[in-house]
Length: 478
Image (cartoon, rainbow, N blue to C red; front, top):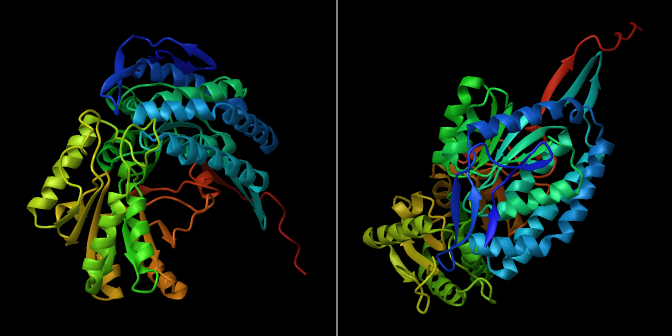
């Protein structure tokens, strides 16, 4: 039984102002696997005061000092990878291979990238007689989700540290234990007291207090669009900076060429990864209308090969994160059936032989129209929707016909054509043939949020820009 009943504030593990506990459920067993303490506004006040004190000195450190700390964190992180993976499997159902692989690996990748960026990042630039200075914004609140816990902690904590900010992290109360271990890593790495603080809790008790606190200069949030709107409302009276990575309903455009079979199969397999719980997942698979039935057959074959079961075993897909999430997904699958989409495979109820745990069948719908609920709403589960297009102009129009704009995908052998389509997709992150890059900016258009994370671009939101006029004498006339 795991416990996280203390918070990390000012370099120490401390008890909450008022002890209130929350049971944490293992989604594979539906049994309590641990407990956390729920923080409050009083705990937030204490953490903010610690971060504010630490900002005076941490903001004055140079890049070399901060690189040394980040390298220490990387060394400690690498010693705890097994512990982190075990926590992820237990708290959010990530299969062992995924937890030990991409889930933990993303955190390390973003840390290494932050170190590389900081080694050459320019915090000052002289333009004529004016000096342009990039300074840390101040005390930052970081609110992270349960679906890729370490990835989302990494893309917020490491840029904040690298730019000289101090911070308070609130991990998801649904998947809190990886955040606790991450905090142990930060302590062991020698991060100065008050620079990094961590409070467990829920949105009502901690998230709202962080969002509205007058001594917090910035809040960065990853989660649902609904919650993001509430955070922005809470933050508005204090005019703090708000960056958000929110929902998505991303298009995956498959071109009509010799790689069609491989690309349809790849799109479906990708959709099932992490039990479909990825905000940037290509959940709307767009295929040529003349090849819709072929796509459905390929999709069925692919989805039926996805093994589902106990995440501690050699399976491709574990449960979704919670009962709430399971019920939401079931409701949207039901809506797809009722609205006339063709259920190719999967569907309602748990997979056979799995009566316990929040397991969802790998599900594919074909002949979906963009007006259907399953094409408009973020399902956040292993459900792929196949939509037909008559020509590439229509494919782009369908791709952009959404209130979201987080990601997009194009797959095909004609690279020049794929590039043209990628430029037309209204999203912040577009991948051609499954391209991946830790230095690529990640973030959304429209209701998918604002601001960018990853690589150098992840530094910018944590910085204020100051212009110092008259910094140097004007050049004498020739």
